[in-house]
Amino acid sequence: MEANSFAQVWQDVFSVQPDPPQWIVIATGVVALLVVATGGRPWRVARNVVTIAHEGGHAVVALFSGRQLTGIRLHSDTSGVTVSRGRPDGIGMIMTILAGYTAPSVVGLVGIVLLTAGRITGLLWMSILLLAAMLLLIRNVYGVVSVVGTGAVVFLVSWFTPDEVQSFFAYLFTWFMLFASVRPVFELQSQRRRQPSSRSDADQLDRLTGVPGTVWVLFFGLFNIAVVALGVWLLMFR
Image: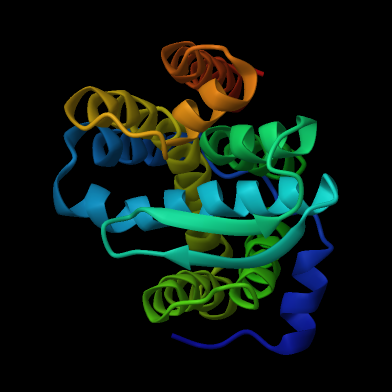
């Protein structure tokens, strides 16, 4: 496999790439859906990317709401925690918690916007830059391994592979983020039934707003399903 030159990659980042064949769009969607729906080892490994997006969502909204971000921890069971300082209540805290389960689908939607604009290489390098920024906030070894490993895969694809492979990877990633946004919501509700806890995002929102945690779980699910439906329309029927 031959590496691209820096000048070539830099040019590609700001260039518009042609749309891939329709079979790539369909095939990557089917593969992503199978990974999410069937579970098993592929899902357990890929779910780390969902956790990165989830905790990244908390972190970004915490910063924009004026909270002081102190660190992010990612764990091998695909859980994570983002710690920030500020008021323990109020709209900033509510929006910070709300961002977690909605972040993966939003990431997928941003990916669609870039893909439909022909910015395939731009999407890959935007992902690398965001992962590099997130790495500065990671506070445990597994988190470093997870973020660096994810970034390394994206870098290798963007630097060493031809346009067709980059297209396949970018569409697979985008489809995966869309479909993978829904399953953790079901897992959240299942966990709440088995092991009630005040630490889940839904139950923290219950405490902050007075709206029952189950309603928040329903909101997460409906929001993500709506984004998935929009994403399918944009990628397949636009």
